[in-house]
Length: 96
Image (tube, rainbow, N blue to C red; front, side, top):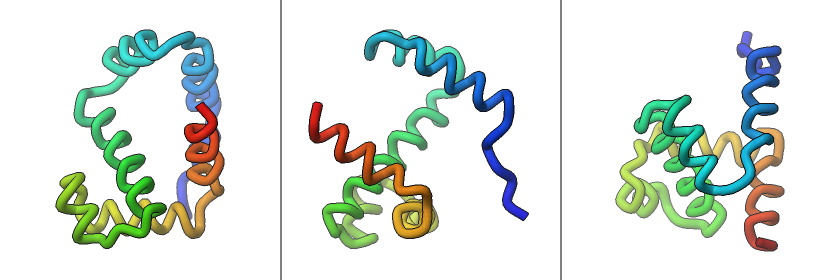
């Protein structure tokens, strides 16, 4: 069975994130709460997703991002079978 993220602790984490007011506060908070590698891994997944949306091949994505094919496959699975969050996030990013 897949372990879900909908816990009280994760809810509190999201509440904390929603209090941040600007990019500098995001940098400060994430530098304090995560390791550098954790933040870079999340950023890499977003970059992989953008490239998948742009219909880049796995090889192109791996070469540009350094992501493994397993990571690329996982992101692709989330895009195709996840909650649809990449769609609304990318749409909102375009608007800003």
